[in-house]
Length: 519
Image 1 (tube, rainbow, N blue to C red):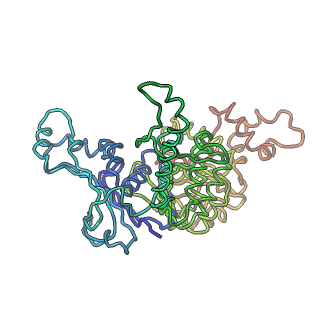
Image 2: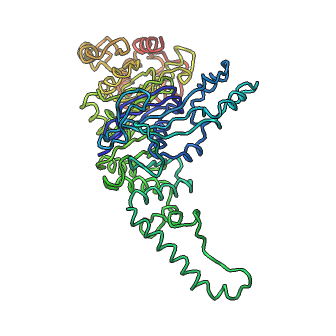
């Protein structure tokens, strides 16, 4: 099984410098927008393809890190300071001596391939003339595009060291992307001798159609004749499609197209595809089809998968220990491989959750249920006189039994987390002893220290008796207002928010939590 062991990038896309090792089976890239997930997939795709035209289609002005270009243009613009772009893939294929050498940025013996984009020395005079101009004109057109193995040998798309495919479901309705996908699958599924035969037979059938079916028509036409195109834009590979049943993939809905393409690629055996790159596979998929897709991914064998996703379901069901966390505010990735196995398994089986929202947050108020979630934003705004969306703080409802699972992640990612929970009649046991191994500088548990105020609803009532009696006392026959609030938690919270948000008082332990998380 051929795998990519590590990638190293310089001045490529989102990253000025980036390096990370990969799992041999599954790598799930998680991050907010502009965090670099697509950069990593594109870098792998380009280097494996060895395609100069692919680089040109992207455009060096789009591939280069924009901040690096801006820094250069604001400097003295010396030729010797022009930035270089490279992307290196370190491979495990030690049997191929063509990959072995020191032609890499580390200068150490290794196996791998790379893309290098650097100023052309033979055009140095022209480049220097451009740099002397007053306007901000960067000489992208004067850069070379070089693909080399670590032995220093050049390679192109005609010589591939690994078979791979990129499925970008954000471009699912793009005809070019669909044709490229089908062409790639065809190339990865067929032997050279078969391909030659297919092209030869297809050309013969086209010619036969001209000489037989079109014969009568052409005999009636003087000077001109009808024919079938046979150029590079009209051949077997451009005419191929994939069918499910009797329907072509292009005529399927977007969600079904996503599923078919991914499913088809995952089913290819180990001799046909080594690497599969999936860009947001959840796009256009229903909840059921997403679960089916996750099952397909888990069943896939003898392939190394790279998945960029925004989906909570995909991230958790595929094992958070395989996640690579990318943050737009930091160039350094974070791995969750040290997450306890039981916590990872918990999220695989737990109800759908807000795990990505939590992972991508700086500060979080973790609350126990719907009632707390409904009122917490109003509490925050009352205490701070600001909208919570203007802060770096998120409110997430997780259920009391899940607090420790989230705190396992908080310890690894250093997410400042305030747990707001009920003491359930025993503050010492439920709020102190239970979290003894978790509480640290960035983690703190908040609850009423009074065992008689055992739940959120009791604390709200005790802090707002007049307000609650005014809203809920009328019509009470058997239940007290407090009992009514305990039996109708979410409805009561919504009514308080709807009618009394401006006058409701905030319980002390929640005040403390908000002040701590905001600091």
